[in-house]
Length: 401
Image 1 (tube, rainbow, N blue to C red):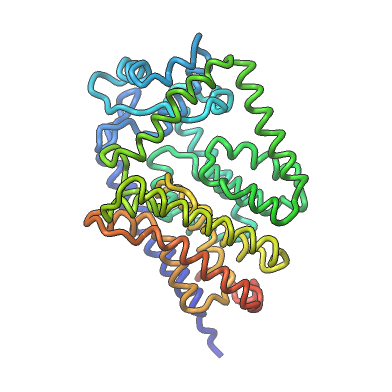
Image 2: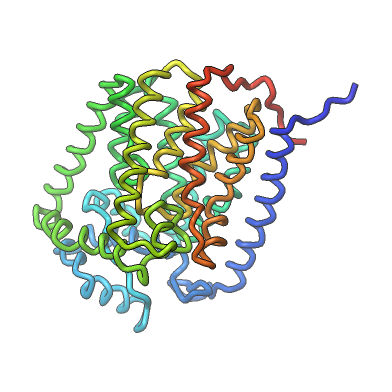
């Protein structure tokens, strides 16, 4: 008798085909619009390829400068950029925490294109090794998702951050020390791990919590020892206010690429205060849902718990770009690959996969709504946990033909 694919497999195949086609189209357009000859190739928007990696690379170079704290001054930092990239280069902000300096230092020793190539390769390799445990040969479906493509095109660290998050959930009981170290390293990109302390406290994983705190303190101490206390003073005095200004000024804010409650409220015409108040309400709700799930349903299906955490993490932060939705794309594919999602769950998983495109499309007409995908998905997963349905099992999973 012929075996027919399940609804989950059909939806997963659709993601694979459409994701692959959209990835190929985006990368082809990016390639043909980019001038590759210069030491700093420019894409179609005149920005250097790996536009966000440029900041990390500059942190690496600054690690060997006499006074890296000076670059928190926007005038000094952008003067350094224009001296290399030419007058008129779009301004960028130097807003990462100083703990990035020792981490980025090795990349600052390399030429820009070589450093970017190494950075991208490390991200893809880390994601492969972290995701293969859950997805096997189907890991590439996440790699061609909009979030992953935006990550690669912008030189962001979301592939590494997502790999770290996947490893944290895999190791938090078997290897709590390694999980704690990774949690400490995620303070370099805190918006993706903002709810990790809530999860650790709720589930009583105190060893991982302690190691994470020690790792964070060690990073701060190492940075202070290498670069002095002034770098922290300038970060608090200039860097954080500059980041807050990005949220206040909608002309600076990349609203088309930010699927957060705060930004969507802005798109609907709400003021900064009202938008932030709404964001805080969602953040409190997300934290409460994570605490409940990991305290009261700690023995439930690990994949559902992980998916709920990723969805709540996206719902909790006001500052998050489309490529930061990569953890949600991963669990969306993983849930479909495992099977046993009902129709509502499958549709939410599909929306989670396409979240950056949904945000970009709706934002063109200042229509809010994309930011509701993550919290609604989280509520659905919480309902699955509270309803005590059978755990999602790998029985229905099979490779795509």
